[in-house]
Length: 324
Ligand code: PMV
Image (cartoon, rainbow, N blue to C red; front, side, top):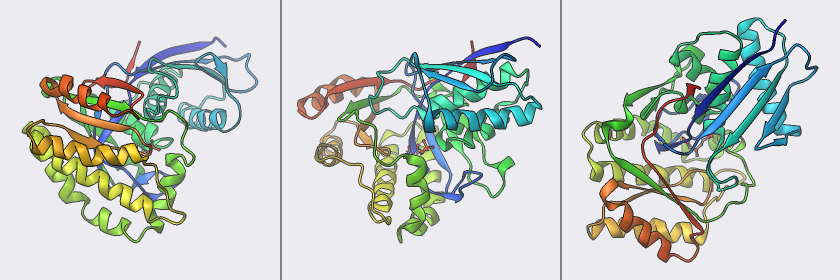
């Protein structure tokens, strides 16, 4: 038997309407649907080599061989791909991010999207975008949204086959920028997979989930009409609702730093005074400041005035996962 190898690239995404909490933890079926934008220029590149000589899977990240939970997660995902292809071959997975390591940008979305695309290609499977999205979802919910291009919606459903993500508009649909203010680059103490399991312990989660169809509808309309004011309001509301659920979980989760909260007050104020900008915050303290391209320079200037901001990254709407 020969070695079989493929390389894929994928970018992370920022959710406008967030995924937080599952209706089924094993299948990773989300409690609510979500909408996101892929982040161009931030990339994970992954090469998967199935090799008959390997006795175990290997995972090398940014040149460093991984063990423990990081390797176990990759191996579990490779098992899904192997089961599907009817293969027992072990694999070497070499992955690197072109964005600063530990910048606090979630890499599980781009990482598992790239692994799904490269792994399935290396096993000789030709899967549709929908099938790739379904598979990526099983290891990281947000990875399902890094498979299709541009502005993406991931559907909540009660069955494995129906909960996939698809593009609602291509990257060139809207020159929207994500100006990312990095406040802290340390790994978070509670990962998003564990956080997602805690969501159901908050009394606010059922309210947040029940209202999701309304937020999704407004967000979809804002994206389709390129209506920044509408987008800004719904994105900020959705972020606040998710962080309220986190704070009222048992045990409670608080990912925000004082500077995050300062910017959550300042950014809507900038908007009220004529600068189009909106915040979105994931399971970490960093602030994603969304804005139309023409306001990006001024947004960046103001973010830099905050002494807690260590680094700034900018991303346009990005493409989907692809084989190189
Ligand atoms: O799929 P995960 O484990 O990366 O969870 C993502 C959770 C958030 O980033 C907080 C929200 C989202 O929809 O991306």
